[in-house]
Image (cartoon, rainbow, N blue to C red; front, side):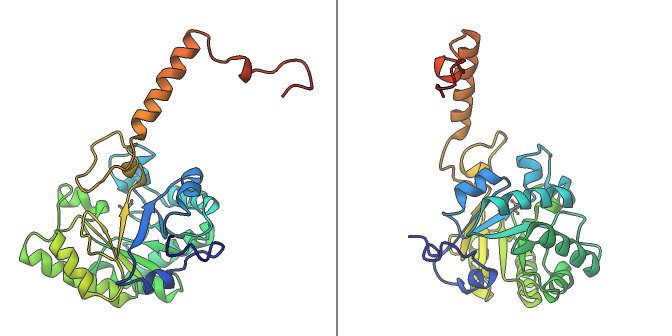
Length: 278
Ligand code: KIV
């Protein structure tokens, strides 16, 4: 039984997630749509409406193309499709970096317009002020350190973090800053396994790993990667638990053949004039 299954009608709050530090691993997945949220809700503790939606569903090259409006629309869909999971919505690039005031205004808009439990933003030391201001405004924040997808263009690509002493020290400072600012949890992405494990031991809030360590307090994957729907290259850290690409392509091929040979629609899929028939 999932750890939250005893309380089917109550949404998991960010305090409950925070209390899971060092306990049963926190199960997280991204979700962007109503039907997928409906399917995932009973299985996970937390659904992240990630800005990866810009790449996964909208076909953009990076997450930087996500907008506040895009995040809010997908956040509303995921809230409609879920009843129990803690729902966190990503703050898109450009909506929080300029100042604490900008960050609070954007976070408030996301929470007011979606009803989600928390927001997530990328950055450590450099975003400590923004996280503290959003938390002070009464909105829970999930941090995100390590490989930061919103910075890949600036970083010159998807570079794994924690491979130099200098970078490990910077990651420690980032983790400390996010914790000190009052975040209830932090995603650690694309970071050397031993470093992610050390960060997990170092801070008192749960760490959620993606391409990080099995020792993190929880794990997250992008849903389309996890079910094998991703059409482009899938990162090394992804485990595919299904092959929906083949299922969808196979169904489309059979449908196309049946339409062309006029075997679809069959008698069961059309209406007769009689009111008694279905
Ligand atoms: O946008 C996203 O999907 C994320 C996860 C990869 C953590 O931030």
